[in-house]
Length: 180
Image (cartoon, one colour):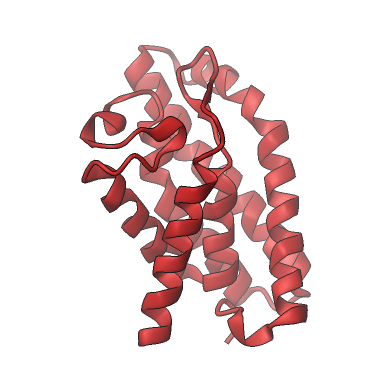
């Protein structure tokens, strides 16, 4: 139990630290951030349940006003902008990424890559694009077009998450909680 709590808190902190990268907003108003790498890693390393809890803790702290979202944003106002769909999708993305790693019995690198691609990109965009469309008053295809600049970076983050997860498995297998 204590180990679970410390890992959840550690990954919430990791996601916050990844937000320290200077904020770069695109035309959509959604910032480019390294925090999605933390979302992917929370799922692939901690597993579905713990990964989602780490992300929920991070979002709770952000909602309470801590400036831990990209660019030092925090508070409920951060949940009213064009990135709201992505923020709502963060815990679901971590959960799906973790679920894939837990259930798919292939090499950890392949499972982590699949989890990161499906959870960290497909699922996250499934929440983020409608959120952008709603807030910006765009159609879904228009919002999807606004999201395309994020894709190359997100693909790179998915590969990094897979490599890091595999590295954790090699160096410290007991720390990889997504594989019981």
